[in-house]
Amino acid sequence: MAKRIMTADDSTSVRQMVSFTLKQSGYEVVEAADGRAALTAIAASPVDMLITDLNMPGLDGIELIREVRKDPRCRFIPIIMLTTESQGAKKQEGKSAGATGWIVKPFKPEQLLAVVKKVLG
Image (cartoon, rainbow, N blue to C red):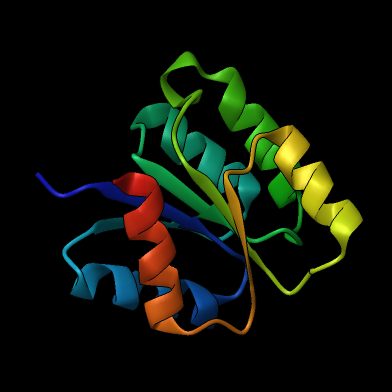
């Protein structure tokens, strides 16, 4: 069965690019336009991995990670931050919240796939 990956980003074009890239490699993709929608979708049906933007309205990526990590079913899923932010302090905040990795936008599809394959095994 295909691994389910959630992509949470308020940018439609980024969600579409991530989704297209992952689907081409055989992954099932669930999209969310913001952190709250992602949290609701994950609570209803857990995923194998989460790829989230940092800056989103309502519930940002760091808050989303903290909330997802509270769910025992999601305690150990890989979570990748996909964001334009690259400051060390933000990366450390993400890691402290429970992020597994960090990819800076703009990204190359093959870079995203390499990270996904590495963390999903």
